[in-house]
Length: 86
Image (cartoon, rainbow, N blue to C red; front, side, top):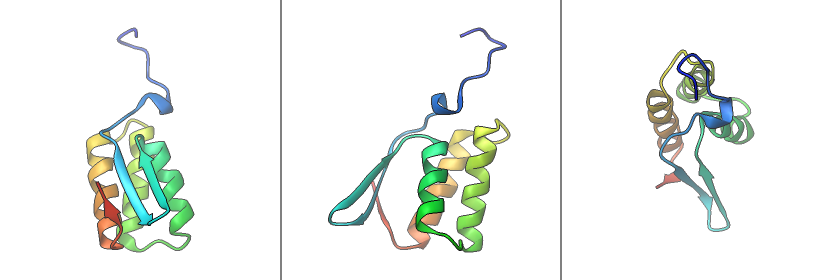
């Protein structure tokens, strides 16, 4: 990739997060875009922490935050909702 070329949204990755919502619902989340999709699906009316995590993931896609910061906020929101993560 050229130094001035920006990666596509799907190319912005982080260490995978495995989210367990139940015995039959396990999801692997590898990008901020996947995290946004999952958070919007499971939290139609998000708490402040969940809304903040969504905002940071959007900003990571827009290159205004690092993927690591977005991932940390995503993990905090999941744990705040008592979801099991690996």
